[in-house]
Length: 196
Image 1 (cartoon, rainbow, N blue to C red):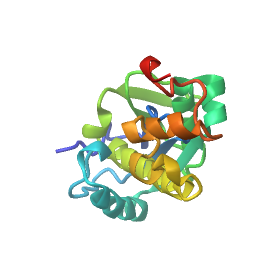
Image 2 (cartoon, one colour):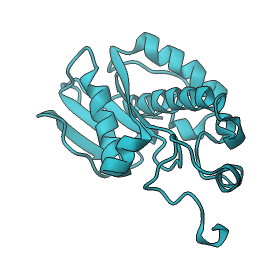
Image 3 (cartoon, rainbow, N blue to C red):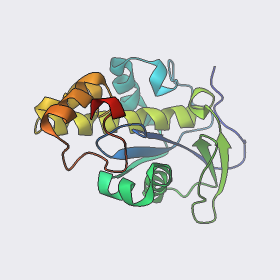
């Protein structure tokens, strides 16, 4: 059972990202402020639930959340600042769009660059421990998946509708056969050494 809050007194926003390990497409992040007593059945780390369930939960999260927002960074920006900093910046962009300013940020992971003067707490595997982080993981994942599906219609040979830009064999074979696109991350190793 996920905890519904870290502290009783502060306005908390859970933050998580999606797409860090992809070869193509943006990195997305979400920030979510949930009511302290809200319990959402089946809410969990987005990686532990089906795509269908994620979209069902997204509707509930968007309806019940006090505030939520999504931010992203494109591949060119990722290449410029590196993927770790890009993940933090995507979270910053999401936080900046919240209609309520949080007093505490619950960050999935072990590192974060502070946002303004808002306190933050890094929680390893936080998306499986706190509802607000789990909610953020679902929004980040579904909004990124939607983006990659739309992009796939323009670049069908890369099968982004199914691999979402992750380094699958199908995706890497397409890079080998068709080359890279403007949506690939140049700072990432797109092909293994023995493929080149």
